Image (tube, rainbow over all chains, first blue to last red):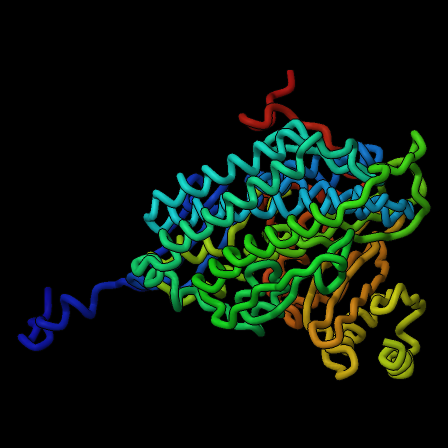
Length: 381
Length: 159
């Protein structure tokens, strides 16, 4: 038997009593805007996200364990499969760690070559961000523009290393070979073109009103939270913290080149985009200085066939395009490492996502996730 | 750095069993596991340290026990501190730092996932990379990493 409902009550029933709270929806793991196999469990109240739980591990290969079973230098190719958009950065990270463990010196010319390649790699990686981020927000044209220029960088890297994605080109004690003949001129030619192309991107995206309204004031990460979560790279620099490993703990020859660390205070999606755009300009500056100053000389230190570093603990940290990439190794004096640990910047940056998404609209999810720029290969390892 | 280090040793002398300074702004401390949380809390709060950035946390299997490695950075002083400790294989327990540094939440979950180390006081200690029903802790040195049947269709019947 139903109770009679008064006319006033009846008019409110339709909107108020509909149960909208706590609807759980699933995003991913196969979803184009999650940039890999990332799954998010969202609890929604209408359009608003109440809670987000990232589920990771779909790409877990146990690389750290695999590395324990191989001699030190055999582990470098594995690192190509971590952050596959910046394989050279990972190569450098593990090589630096092994060099510190074994006290290996790197020739000066090799250090300059490494810096040159790191910055080319940073441009290539940020261009992927730019293209996919534009596509996420509906600016599909950006993808074509960004990948056109990325192709130029990949051609350069291919000429130098012989590969386009998984380079495996940094060695413990230097680099395997000198730069190819006339490589410097080609890089300078690219730099000249790229500088103009950056202007095109600004016209297409930075001054685009729709793009701005989709990104400005969205997904604000306060500075305190960015620090307490240990975020790094463009994510922390967009929140007003000038933390760049290239400045905080300079490695290779980063203390001999001049460059600025772009910092923005707002901490929103827009700021993270701007930081990456300016970083590409700074990379160009570094590349030009490296090509001007690079000395002649050997590119590799000779190492024994069986490489046994003394027992101990060592770590290295570098500024990969995504943030602080750190390798930590424990040696017991045998030819294989006792433990290899990879501190992947995306892993830490993703852990801040639930706090970022709380209270935002579902429609902004894609923009916020895209602005963190995660690579699942290094999150799952 | 020197002043800060003297201050730390004066305040927490009995907790720190070993210390080495590496370069101008890095120090390595070895502490006993009972004082783990106390030392880190001091580094976090003290005005001469202000280690506000949780850089890294990991565990390794020494064969007889587990080593724990924590790396902190100070955005104020540019200090780097590595805190090391070791815990036993039978009682792999250590105080959680996830409430002090939210950034260590996932690191501690990962180390529980791979080594079975219990971080006491962690708000959400469950597996992170492996499926929830995974058996054993694969990064331990005594873990048998042999496949048990077809990975796509589960364990096969033995005849």
